[in-house]
Length: 141
Length: 141
DNA sequence: AGAAAGTTGAGTAAAATACTCAGAATTGAG
DNA sequence: CTCAATTCTGAGTATTTTACTCAACTTTCT
Image (cartoon, rainbow over all chains, first blue to last red; front, side, top):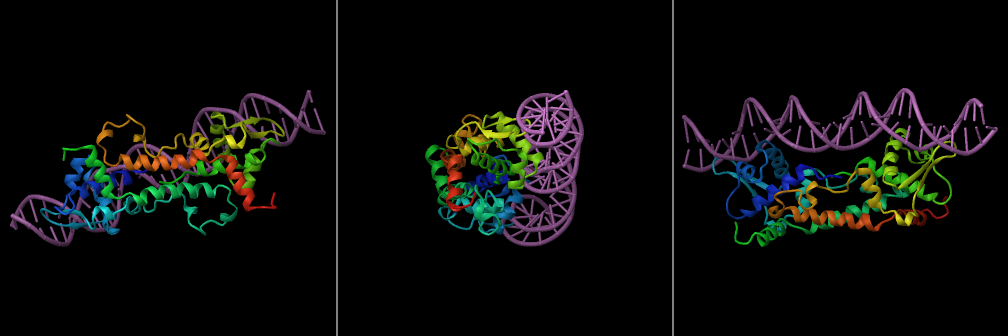
């Protein structure tokens, strides 16, 4: 059960944009340089982030991406859903998607695992990540 | 972030064996029929379960697999580790495996997610799964 | 006009997943 | 003792997913 680079890279990218919230758009080139992620790949990630309304874009010179909302209003789960399609660890998590649902001995444990993941991702926002970063890197920008 | 069939099938198989703990070995054929998993694939899973000491085998007629310990002593995390190699969602979870560790803005969130998963898997045993099953299928075998 | 950006769809190499298969080894039952 | 039932093992493979690349196009700022 591994987290893909989509989720990892994407969250780093959104964090980076969040740092400049209310200031200026951040270009893919900038993010690529700061986070060491290829520009081409970032384009694909932002395609999804934009579609899900997490970021908005400005074209042309001095353009780039900005968050559509305040960082405290964007949950980690929002970002993950946009990037990974779904943050479900199993298809059969959703009610009714499996005919054996009622009798499945192991379903309960997977539901618990899923819930614990959701709890963390739903209660952590981009702002929280920024705050953590600021606390641990006092003085540095 | 999907759970693989190794983990899903494997836990179902271990549950099945757990039902017969203290009675008789359960053959791959039986598990295959009851759980709808191919015999060939189950062999691969049991190779790992045996290597990690979760099950022991008896060859020949009337042979099969048994748990090495009481179901209440086998944690879900034990089974998952045996089957998936590691239940870590990221390589960089372990201290020191990433040079950016100290400055990584998103590491904290992944650590929290990992911990929440571990909490569930470490505190749930095969016996718990059996108990749940019995409770929801009273009267059934 | 030209450069700096985003936009999009298609394509691809590598890795992981989810198996299959064949044959050898072991053991219990008749 | 022999045969059938079963595990044991390594190799092989098809499919899917991941992790990208690439090229051409559009928009906007200067």
